[in-house]
Length: 270
Image (cartoon, rainbow, N blue to C red; front, side):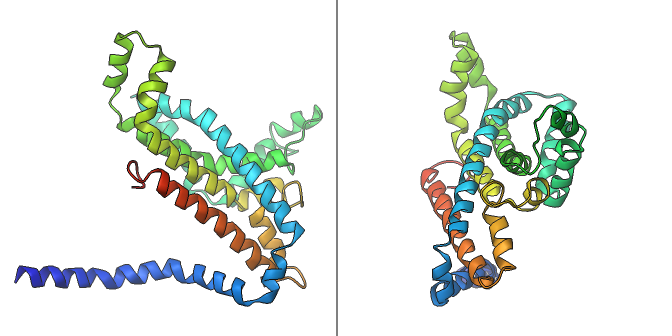
């Protein structure tokens, strides 16, 4: 009797599970099928514009990740070890870009760093213009993507027992050596997962980049911006957009498969 009930429950879970999985699989399968059957898509894969945009996207996303790791790791550590109300407020503020529309992020960056922004105007007077440059692309990506790394790093650090660090201090280890030899191995899966999410989010950033950096080929036009431009172009149109989308999906898929393999035995992706 109990076996029949369990079998019935498993079958009951199958239908919504398969339906939900197909919701994600079918659009990607349709994109791949269009790329394989449309001869125009194959021709567009050799587009110079696409490969320039891909190179810029990979470069800016990697630079964004480097900045997020270098600046976000100390911040996440401080917040995870703090018990003050100010730390909780800071965590909430850092989470805001995760829920804000990208357009709001772009407008916010413009109000501060744009040519007529609070900091942008004085900097422009010094000959340092940030908006509509490659630096603006990195800033836009950092604003929307870095919180993914900081949040993951914070969660990993907050879950570790500070007592391990205390023992290391009593043995004469410095703070840096304690972090490197004791804390880092414990939180490495969380840091790796957050880093990949940060890089992937930066690679796919569109709204904030478009508003703050614009879409200039070779300078600010990343892959998502190239997709928008190709979609409205003649004669490439949908074929050009599909070709760029397929390349972007392939890059993201390789990255995610590498993450799953790397964290196969530990961390949030096991």
